[in-house]
Amino acid sequence: QVHLQESGPGLLKASQTLSLTCTVSGGSISSAVYYWNWIRQSPGKGPEWIGYMSDRGAYYNPSLESRITISTDTSKNQFSLKLSSVTAADTAVYYCARSPKWEVLRLDYWGQGTLVTVYS
Amino acid sequence: QSVLTQPPSASGTPGQRVTISCSGSASNVGVYTVNWYQQRPGTAPKLLIYSNDQRPSGVPDRFSGSKSGTSASLVIGGLQSEDEADYYCAAWDDSLKGRGLFGGGTKLTVL
Image 1 (cartoon, rainbow over the protein chains, first blue to last red):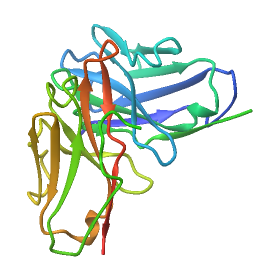
Image 2 (spheres, each protein chain N blue to C red; image 1 turned 90 degrees about the vertical axis):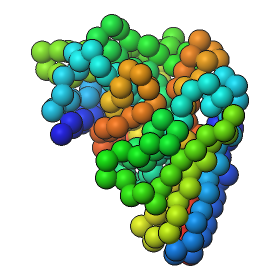
Image 3 (tube, each protein chain N blue to C red; image 1 turned 45 degrees about the vertical axis):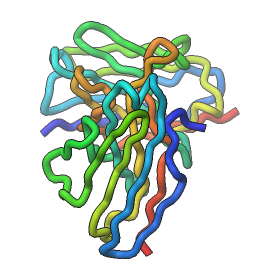
Image 4 (cartoon, each protein chain N blue to C red; image 1 turned 30 degrees about the vertical axis):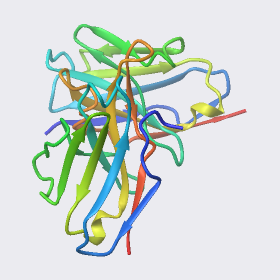
């Protein structure tokens, strides 16, 4: 059974850089079959797809790509999200999730999510 | 406003059949498969339907999905109290260099 767990600071000041890590167990992030995604959900809104990492590199939501970096640490079976210059609009629950490469939005395993609050 | 449009709310009584729609365009639903998620309060979304009409293992056959043109639908037959949740459609979109999209969500109330 695949398990994903997000970790990172829950409170950030505006203009700082958000850094979150997703630890994966029960599956390898080096897999050639899957994408490892970040998704966020602002209070009361639908989810927003942020981007994914694969064995061939990262791909980002064009609306966020100027501020995003997704990277991996294969030795720890982790992948990470960095989002720079945060504002209150970046306050959300951040999730990591897995999907097969042939269907990016078929997110079959999710972490429990971590709430990130940005204050000014 | 989301690019994938869903009704904000839906309701039904136990045993009833409820349909939730997802309206997109030629750059998303019209060319890519649609996935549906169920989200209960305080939990992560759960994959309910993938590839338009396929159920993951463990999802009851009361849940079914379909797609026609630029619209998709989720049907819940034999509504149960535990089905009260938010439901989201999701699809890839070719605009803006390519991106994943979610609908705005439909809150289902079981009366």
